Image 1 (cartoon, rainbow, N blue to C red):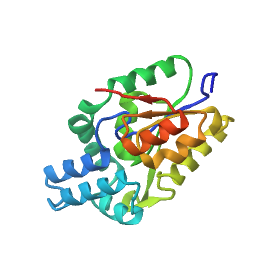
Image 2: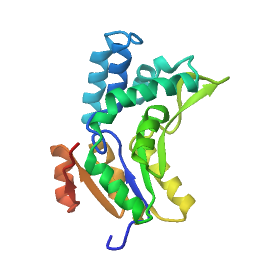
Image 3: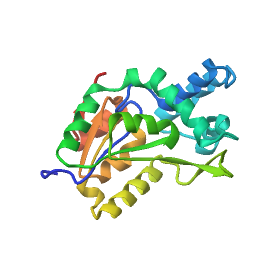
Length: 221
């Protein structure tokens, strides 16, 4: 892609921030007495699976959103704001913020697209001033969370679907966009955009990037 991208998508965890937001959320809940200590080992276990490209979505959802169940949006947003300030803000990659700012200044929409749920991701999107947030949406009944999500879960095909939907609303093609990501779980979306950029990745995605001549960058806090 020689011309400017029509839209620039960014993954969240380990792409624009230096930690995993869902693992961090569980640690935050445990540290504040809102989840059992046993959840720490399970959170790390699911992260290891994710890194291998293996993610049992339904099992993870039950675990990850258990503490959402029965709470209101306002209650979760208060917790999510605390979580962001205490656990996430110190790990924002300054290089990511610079790139987002540069694209925005050039009039190019910047979009955070993540499997993390909307309410954990929202404070991050707001702080980094992206144009839009595409995140996993959670089910509400009578103003309270059920602990379930509304498909698609934004992982692999789900992330591609939401990115394509966003592009259609703007009247552009996914092939006219850019995507910055770090994970093997994003290989399919990286392959579909016109300008894929691999950031802070491990050996497996690095090998794919080198094979396809995708740019590779290292960002720091």
